[in-house]
Image (cartoon, rainbow, N blue to C red):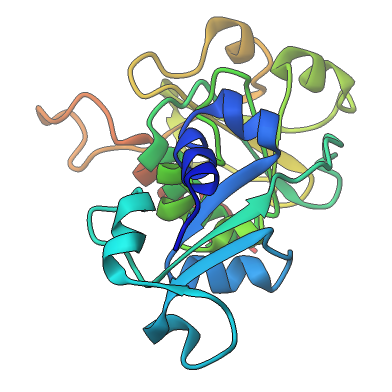
Length: 244
């Protein structure tokens, strides 16, 4: 039986304010919980008998799990993990670093974290108005990749100003140059992805040294205004990795 106090805490973790107060975030499902448990220890783990498979852990019924789950279809287990406390801002030296400037949709942020994991990008630097990576919807969308990607929120302009002057900063812009026709630095570079509706903010755009564009085919044909930011991130990261 889940106590009323624990139920209250779990439900409160849907909001960023309470995640910070409690120092916890929610993960659900055997895949996501399992991946996170490889790198950190859960504070609380709640699961059905099917998940625990006869171990001595206290179990809940599927109905009880449904009461606390943030998913439409609960997946056997829910766990509370400590929020990462490492606030150090990474340097792009020797690697690719992904920057998110005002990406708002939780599903997009979660998918981008998963894309970064797939392409071996270990660090994502986010503007403070980017959707919180530890919101339940974002964590779920990462499908466990949040366990392997370091995510930091900071003042992007201050971070850019702290980089070596010769750091290549790529940004995807509609008036950029065809990504398939440009030379790309595949190590020690930064890739910036912008807000779903407004793209990269003017202030951050001023820090971009190489504007890139993903062309539609055939060029000049009437088409969609732009690509979804997560899809654009996947295409861009794929092209950088292809050049290795």
